[in-house]
Image: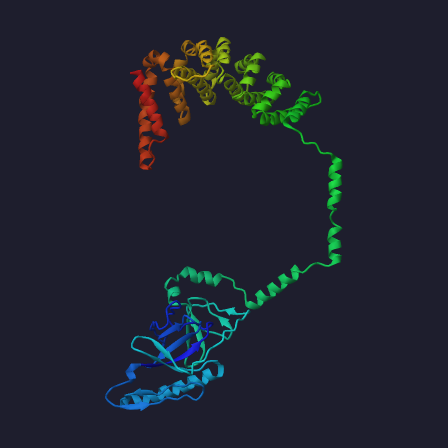
Length: 535
């Protein structure tokens, strides 16, 4: 079999499928429209490609013998081809000769390469004629990349083709045409078409002008321009001298607290200024060292004086500062008890005060009693449970009730944990002293005496799940001393049955959503545990 071939530069792309990584001699037949193009080959040693055009075998027939030699005059050479033609194919052969001559005329005007004869063996190897010319690749810095679409469009000289595009040579016009490749068309969707329609493209000329302007902007400015800019700013050395003359002093937390206390105690300070000082102190005393330093400066006394103020805003903020300073700080807890802070806080709770003040005072009381059995003993001896019970009955919203019940539950749990820790083999030296101090706190007996076994179940009537959970935990903690009251309280037993049915339905909803051991399941477990103790 004989075919025509022409050398194609790398800027020219394939007419049909391209296998650029294949070894020499591999072919992938295909057809480009009405143009019989078989394959594009790229050798391993060079970057040239050769496009092979096969003469259709349908022109050949074994019935009539004859030879036809086609020779093109405009740089296009066709080697003699031995053919056996039928009489009906002579016209077709003549038309082929004229078509090839026209193709040669076009290529002779714009192409740097010539058509040569390439013979293919039975094994598929390709032999090259002596007339094949090497085409040198000239690099062009200003190549314009054509944007391939679904439709054929003509390639202009100097245009580059994106990878994967489909390129063909129109034998009628002699122009190269390009469109999207088969793989690109295969996965092309309407979204790609709309994106290309709205995407803005820059022409090469616009890009050149932008790059030229960028280079101009990078050029160094003139001396006059530098002087003009420098006149608007002060020199660095001058700024350094001015900063050194200021002799700026960085205040430590200790100095800040001292300054704040002096301002708070000043007779010229207004109420608004004192409120601002208390807010700054509350931020500082969260650190254990700062809280202890504040006490050593006498700041605790100023805070207690704020609790006695007639302005409820000062009372609220003073209690907030005191609670933050007492939280997990034994040194401050001891000094607060010695300063009479507990009695003052209970006095504020026993008097008529706004809800905001009572919330902050309860916070301060809870911080003072936590992990401090000595303060808990004084709390009980000063009638703290009685004051809390009156506050519990007066609260209709449930906010104060929840805080009170949570504080009582924490106190009961602390004592139980200390008792359980006595079973450990390894104990620190202070454990026996803690056990001795907690033994002097008759908390559960006081709870039974002050009627808390009947007060805490009232919190179950709330619609808030969090309130109910805290009430159930407190009821379980008080069960050792309150079982008789629980069994005799019919409303409590009815509430437990009703709540269990309600939360059991919520558990089923959680399981449908794929949530196992959720929050509602935990509440059901608390109800079951309390029912078991009551039975």
